[in-house]
Length: 346
Image 1: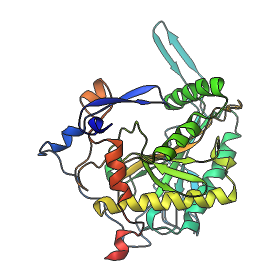
Image 2 (image 1 turned 180 degrees about the horizontal axis):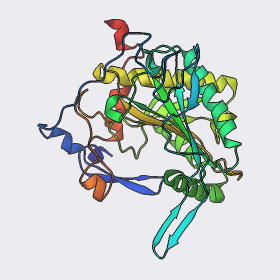
Image 3 (image 1 turned 90 degrees about the vertical axis):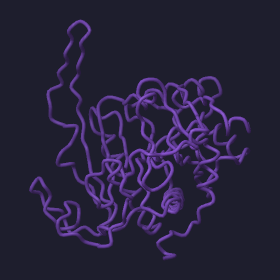
Image 4 (image 1 turned 90 degrees about the horizontal axis):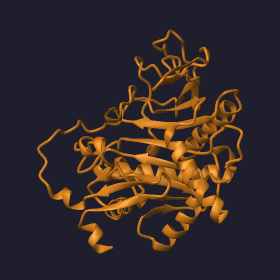
């Protein structure tokens, strides 16, 4: 295993059936490329020009209520629409299907300056409860077969508004990543009659090489097959297929581990650490999906510093995912970070 921390090798992703190229020696190369602007924290609890602050006018002309807890609404510029014709197009090799869906915005807090790592555990718990409600309500709608909950944090990740928020896209078809993960988990379930991710988690807890944080109900770790430099995954200890199955105690544990992990992220480079985070869970297509084990993944782009990110270009676009540090090296750096947010020490 020591050679793998120094030399190029491939690692297999058990959830997708795909491989990632790992090139740890590349971190030694000099960098004369692009440097990003470091992500900054907002210092104001309310911003008059913000479309997401309570009571403010949105671009669509709608006015936000004076909300005092997590708040969701249908996106004014949705990528998916609910009321469209169910048309199909077929012309030899050309195919197209209408895609019905609903896109929602979830404001984490009325406070314009509160990101997840500096929110209280009970405030994050309220966000997760809203995710639960939306998963149930949207999943019960006709023609909705999958619910994707996610957050893009930071301008570097394409976030168009600094007010801390996430999104939920509910759609008629099942996305490609979910198809791959369903296929691999189902193959394992049919042979072993137990969760693929549960078996993987058991092995990681025994090895203790990539485990970052543990509590009674969840474990945060760097996946063995991670692609992004500081990619992590939060896995429930019990085989929960989807977020609606979490108990009240599990909700609090989930909130605690999200806060701890995102705090460690911010502490790595003393910045508001950008990422895309999302929950993968069982489709809402009416099938039992006994094979599914929900999990939340974080894909941060930063590599060397608060200003140097990992670019997915060239070989990554045309051939294969590739990363420059091993999962174990990344785990060591994350583990070393304190659980107290760096801003409290300034």
